[in-house]
Length: 183
Image (cartoon, rainbow, N blue to C red; front, side, top):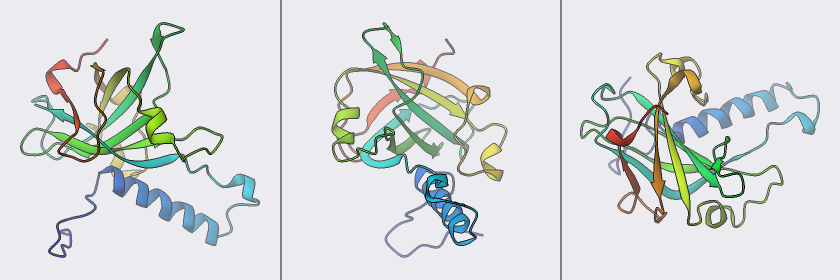
């Protein structure tokens, strides 16, 4: 079925991060009204916080066909340990466009404390960031749109030094697909 437009442009594309978030909400809602939770403690944590910061991969690798879903994960540098943090602080998901780009507004992973007020400014402060790209060659997102891809889908990574995390697609932090290496 083709997407429905409303003369203002398509707002949610299948396989983008907004679609993923909406499907997760629908699944949670169905579980609540279906009494699948015995208590409030069983409710899933709402740990995806939408931001206005955008990440872009330009010059996507030729092995990524147009339309394939790509997830981009943002990891920070741990100055104390002198290594990249294992868990990402943010992610986005988009599809490869005919212009060989992947774009997406970042979803920030909230801390367990539930503090979300200043999350965007604190999480995306200046510093070093590692971008890890996972590509859905196996079409796993077809059956589970809320899935976060893992090591088996890992394509490559590249450091993004001192990005300017500004709002909007025009000001996206960008990295070339040619820099994504398996390390």
